Length: 390
Image (cartoon, rainbow, N blue to C red; front, side):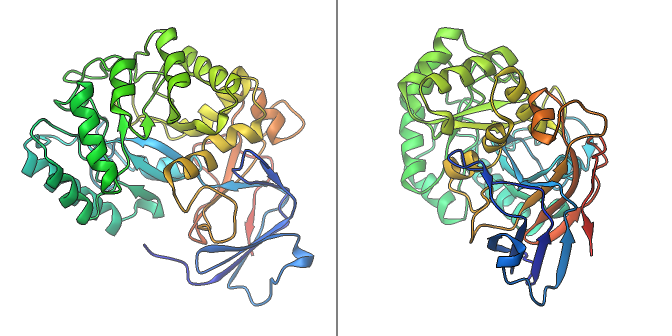
């Protein structure tokens, strides 16, 4: 991974969102990063801001950890054959997302389903996104879809080769609980995180995965619990929330009503820390560069959730649930940020109030590993104020 290897000072910050449910807004007006890692957060007068390599005047805007999309289906580079679209990752960066997590490279034309081939493709996908970061975005990829016939040694080989994710259980031939459980346990033994398709078929070739299979498989993430696209019946969604402690992933490409049901159930259980966000794109419904921002605004406005808490769903919750070094405003974490402000002419007294009414903020800048990767977004509504590189 490339790093900035310099000292960055961001001053005159209007508000610092932390990504932490226990304290979603931090005191301070300045952040310092060194060698691509956060080194200090607080007030400029109290921090060592001497001899910076770069200074950014935030001009009073809000800064948040870079957003994380917990559920994507990349293929290679910044191209998706599912929608015949180039530069979708760069467009996603313009929506404030700095880290993407693959749930399987399932849209690869001719995707191999034999065990040798699927392992080879997973290792290749992990390598090409490790070696090439489109527009600087961190793409955590190489997520094999499990198939019948895989043995424990296959998971060890994948892990030894650097593969740390499983693609959605259920997108391959393994759709039964006992087999999925065995393979998920093998994956977990070798340090590989797992997710599962939840709900009805998404595309031809996939199938129904109901609550019984989800609970027996016991993956680390209940993938698109609100359906991708078709959600399970209400009682099954509530049962999933109540019967395990795994991450509850809500996606843009799912059922909005089921998303609110999941949110309300998690709140009743006092387990909002389990909510994480994804887009489940690129997919049949397209590519959503603003998908994570839209989910934050949707859940805040329709779910009656403070906006600063909703931002945690797309940052710190995912970081903690997936054990990442991004997504939290904390010393030692990667200096990955999105700077944003209330959109011009949007209702509300400030950014948070505007988001709570369902409006998107305007993204003014993204930073990854202490390096500016984009400035005024070409995709969000224009912000009232913009940060400036000094």
